[in-house]
Image (cartoon, helix red, strand yellow):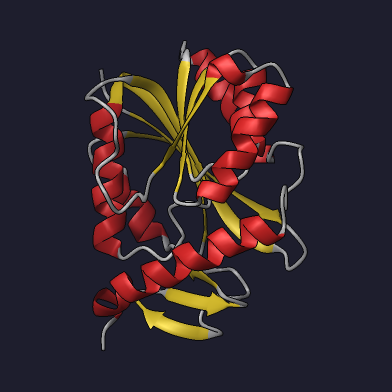
Length: 223
């Protein structure tokens, strides 16, 4: 069976795994924002953005950071448990009026109107258990909901990562470790996803204990 054929079953297993993980480990990533989110604030402010779509928001450390920095945030995730934690945290921090949440799987069309947001941020969301076709479709959806000139900042683990090519393989460069399936990116995929955009930056960095090796990609929709 190919990776493309396995994706629906793998997707369901990953939804259940993440829901269980967020329920069993509330606030598992802590309260401090990720370094890519801190960077994205500067990118979005320079571009004059006011509202941000946060994909794969989880329990909300980055979404809350954007709200604290003055942005209006629409946060999505396929884990209701994670988003419940985000909502409670936003209310506790007095940011409830700047954060809206929606349970959503990015394999489905984004629940937003065309040209309705200024910026999109996704930290390791595109390198979840998504097929190449699903990733291209998602980036097309992001282009649809962004306003002209809008910014998209995302991070992905790449093929130079120590986990690439190890663990349980699901095809299409998806490998699973400890129940977490990751789609590793090569540079050709990054470039293909920037077709029709302005590719501003591909920045290599490391995160975590392994360490995970990632790219932070910034691209802009033409005006």
